[in-house]
Each structure stands twice: as C-alpha cells, then as structure tokens.
Length: 432
Ligand SMILES: *Cc1c(COP(=O)(O)O)cnc(C)c1O
Image 1 (tube, rainbow, N blue to C red):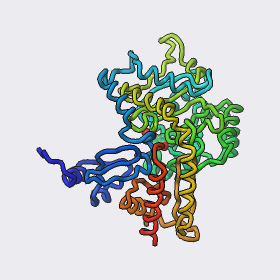
Image 2: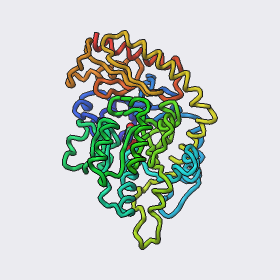
Image 3: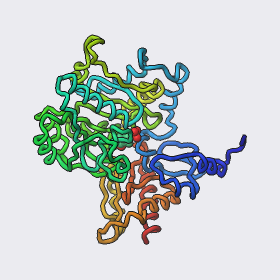
Image 4: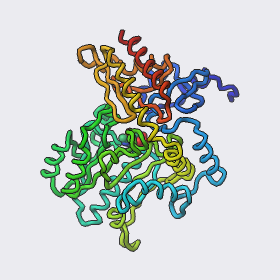
C-alpha cells in the first residue's frame, strides 16, 4: 500500500487504471495528466499549486464558482441529516422544495411536474420514454418517432445518443440506435412532419444555441416558430437545457428569451451549481394525467434510478437557485456579458480567428487558416491551443477547432481579461 500520493504517484496510477470519458487513451497515457486539487470561485488549483481559470466551467457545469460558502453550507447541513434515501416509495423535503422552486419559474398550469434523475442523458431518456408511453396510452402507438436537429447533442446513453447528430460520436453505434428523423431547420421540420403524419410524437432541440455542435446559435425567433409548428401539429416540444440552463444565456432558462414553454424541459449540468450529478425532467399536467389510473390499468411510468432525487443534490440545487436571488446573479451578469463580448472581439485581429460565436455567457472561438480554410482534423489545432493555454493559466477544451470559453457566472472582469489574454497567447504560440 502506498501512503504518499504525490503528483507523480497519482499520475502513474491514473495511467495504469483509469479510463477517461471522451478521451483518446493512448495519447493520455503518454502524457502527464493535470491533477486538480481544489478550487475557489472561477479558479482551480492543481496539486503543484498552480492556479487556472476554469474556462469551460468544468465541462459546462459550474455556475456560482467552486467552494462557494453558501453551497458548501447547504451541502453540509443536509449531510448532517441524511446523505441518501430512496425516492421509490418515500419522499423528502429537499426534493419537494426543489421541485416547487423549479416549477415556480414557469407560468402556472404549464410545467407543473418534476421527474428527477442523475445526468443530462437520463433527463432526456425520461422525457423520451414519457413521450413514447404517452402516445401509447392515448391509443396512438405508431406516433412514437422523434425529430432531432443536425449537429444535436443530447447525451450518451443509447436513447439520448440516438437523438445525436454528431457523426464522430455516434458512428460506432450505427445499427444500435433507434430511428430518428433528422432535420437542419424549422422549414425542413415542417416538411418532415407533413410527410410522416401520424408517426412523429416529439421534436427535440437545444434552444438558442447548440453546444457540442461547436457553440452554434440559432437565429432569433427560431424557437418561437418551432413552438408554433409543434402546436399546430400537436407534436411535443422537448427542450434540452442541460447546457443552456441556469443563467448561461443571460436568463435563467434559454426558452425564456422567446417566451416559449416546452412540453418537456430537461435540466442537469448547472442544476446543482456544478456540485453533484442531479437532473430534472419537467413536464405538463396534460402529460402527467395520461399516466393516471388504477394500478391494474398499467399506466404507471416504470422508470427510475437508485439515486433519483438524491437529497444532497437537491439541497445544493435549492441553495444554488437561492443564490440567483440573494446575489442578484442575472442582474450582475448583464454588464459582464457585454465585457466578455468586447474582450472576445479583441481576438478578431488574430488572422486564425475565423468566427466568434456567442450566446449570453457561452462562447466558441473557431480557428481556421488565414483566409478561412479549415485546418485538417489530424492537426488537432484546437487541442494544441487548449494545451498551450493551460501554460498561461486557462483551462478549457475544444470542439474540433472551436475553443469553448464559458467561465462560471461568478467570474470577474479581470479574470475574463486574463483568460482571453491566455487564449490569444496560446493561439500565437501554436499558429504563429
Ligand atoms: C452535456 C449535455 C447532455 C448530457 O448530459 P450528461 O450529464 O453528460 O449526461 C445533454 N444535452 C446537452 C445539451 C448537453 O450539453
């Protein structure tokens, strides 16, 4: 047994035993992984005492910063009560209060029910299974197809992965995904619905901006049009706000920008402020009531996970939502969004900065050859720039050659400046 776990020992053991998500492991095992030890606000510190800006909010999860005293206190208080009890057959205060708080953000009689699970993927799985079973219960068993958009990303479990439109991620699963109609636009959706009348039950969208597609915003008004199309055809609208939720776009939820309420709203990543895995699928009374009836009628939604509604997650999520109010987070975010926009604009002078895409506090900086030709995939320019940025105190990950910049909402103006400067230095270092 080892008793001293210094950084080198940790790295060696990681290389021997770990298998990391979305990671080419041969390259990983040939390198020296960054071992993070602690955090404060928008910053993270490694085991050797170096600090970095958390430039992608720890894969889009962190909202109010790391080691937040209020979140820590809420978590500790719940821990002193009980860490976990089953949500199958019993209930508890943190989940009840969190559900109450979540639905209070929407008009009464719209989203009124909350189904808890663990991750973004499972929030989508729950919505999909509810949508399918709803049609069966309504006597339309053929109307269970889904439509998703090109470039969509909705998670990695098989149902959610079936909705995904990113070839690289999903090619290995070809033949093991259930059929999904894929469209590039609302126009194409109208056509698809017309041509497949009676077979499509729901449309799924990342509202306002697609994340894993490379931070690609939709045009203004798209979401409202989509809602109208869904209403006209009586097709469910499932909004995946796993990335856009909890202030990231400048409002608490992206759908609020266009005053759209979906039939299903999927939340995860930022729900607990980035502390613990917890997800929620919100839906309407119309959906919920279709599942009511005597047990023997077989209308029950038989789906759930061992840690559904975990009390620690619910307690910290509730505290995170309260911080939005007590710290007036969205109000204070608005000038910071303008600041971010302005600072990112300064990158435009670099000839390899092809396009800066932004929605609220989410940004993607796409790099190409001067003149606009994309880099060859095998050059791994995005990955190399992110590695170089690390040397200047910025942690983030690319999506191909698009660098993601979306720090926690608590970031300061000068931390944004330092992060953007680190990125500029890294781009110059790698691309000359
Ligand atoms: C991350 C993400 C998911 C999947 O969430 P997990 O918690 O990783 O399962 C789904 N949809 C969107 C839009 C995401 O960004």
